[in-house]
Length: 174
Image (cartoon, rainbow, N blue to C red; front, side, top):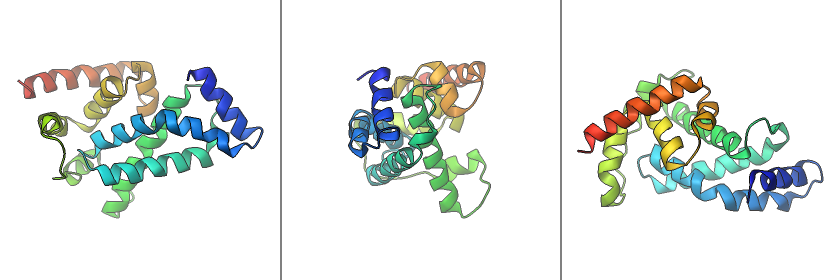
């Protein structure tokens, strides 16, 4: 399914009121969104499932706000990104939480595969921005331009995060 197909399904839901037209979008993006959350939560599958479900509910409810200025996947990942940090803020019970606090607070010792243990440990040592940029660009396959829109930062800044993250990961995984 291409971006044109995504737009077709969005239009079916928003203009024609065909609620079933959202299903193909969920099927297409549920694995990438869940994988994104698995990496952000360091392998917590149950939480990843819950956050994924919340992302799709919010996307469905806000579908009329999708203007098509960026790809549907970019818009959806931005919602996912916000859902995760809303969850973290709710856990802390504060209105404002620094990203470093989020990184320190959200350390899990969940069961996850041994082959991912080293990667998760290395990802956990990156700055929040570096980790998110790496996950979006290399694990989710978003372009730098798309990832910069998801993270709401300039393209050059996103490229700096990716570069620094790659350098640190290479060092940590040796």
